[in-house]
Length: 534
Image (cartoon, rainbow, N blue to C red; front, side, top):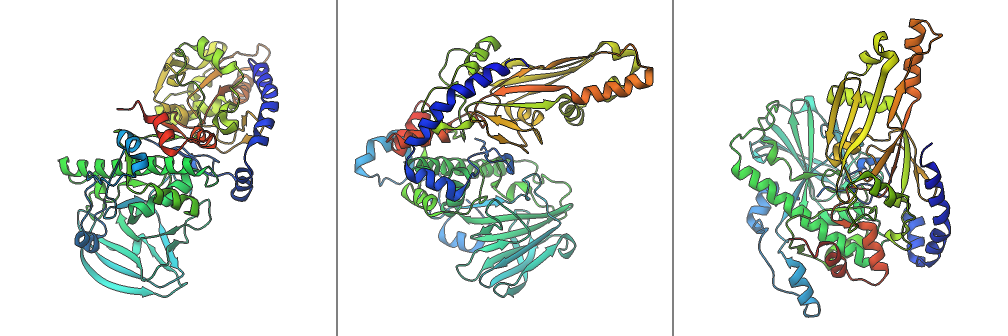
């Protein structure tokens, strides 16, 4: 198979370098790895990202839900600045980040299901180590309580369950702990088993299911983002950099939602909503890699320390994205031409970069029929009818190719052609979704494999065997030919060679960890990745 030799050569050449790199890693990193195992480090996933995968990626987050308390204490101006810089780092901070008063800011997070594929529930079951209160009330259009109808106290270790049928039109629930105990959603599952939520839980009824929202202080939210987006055994300075990025991104989401609400002409987004709730008011973001992963891993001491150490610090840049692992194609010569990108991918990756990540290079073999079925489902390409047509069997051609790469090698446009019909798939996320490996095993640089991925690891890739001829067997009858042709199509594959994990924009988390291990501070790391951002 084309280019398999170069991949095997790369694997062999890297083995010694990888072994040496492992020896130089500090003991606490190795110990932490075995203690905590693999976990999601950004997104969008994905997690994911996506999210039975070992990694997730992120995309690029004031809460009006704590109605009485927040209004009494003040909402906290998202744009307000706090000039209390540490003198030792004042110049660096002034040039790169600013301080925001976050004590009065709360955030609303829409919780998705176990696979992060749906945000509607048939039933929600909640418990707590301490007692908690359930308030049932009438929901206003802005997703707040118009008035409370009744209250119920649930004793410690007891469960409270609600289904769609148990909530009337325009009703909502607010669940709040009466002590310091978190609320556990026992009908959900996350990487750390049953997820626990600080703050309050809100349950809304829409036409087709229940919506679950967690409202909590921004800084508390960040503790469970940092632990979910970056392994807690990463160096302290890397975790701090992650905390600043996560805070910046969350505040942007909050501001964006408020701007949408202020300028929207159409007040009702979901016309199927039983309560007529404006869904823009329900939450600032969700807990998946589509935004940034929240509470897939419980908050740890390390993540909480990183959030507290950078409390209120946000980047000056308008956009703040981060991802897991680079393909190392940044700041290279133009890689928009396939030949140039191919030459780059075939080189042995540089030593001691990206924390020795096996995601630097990977390959996966995906059945063509799997891609064609998804193209039909999502883009309307009629492949089955064409394959089964006797008249075209002898000249049937399926072609899957990258039609355009960005300057750093990222696939920007994918085309899928069957016969005379061609569809174009644009955008990094859409391409990665169409080419998701699913059950196919992704082989990493160190020889390990990963399966059940809902997205292709990255859009930094090349296709081999992307064009397959389906030819008629001369000795077969017409009926046998069609059957044989379908079987042959199921056996044809596309081999994808790529590098990196995630969308490749902003801060590389593995790169941040390596910089921190080399002695960089979190401000050094942020300067490295965002210093040129406007």
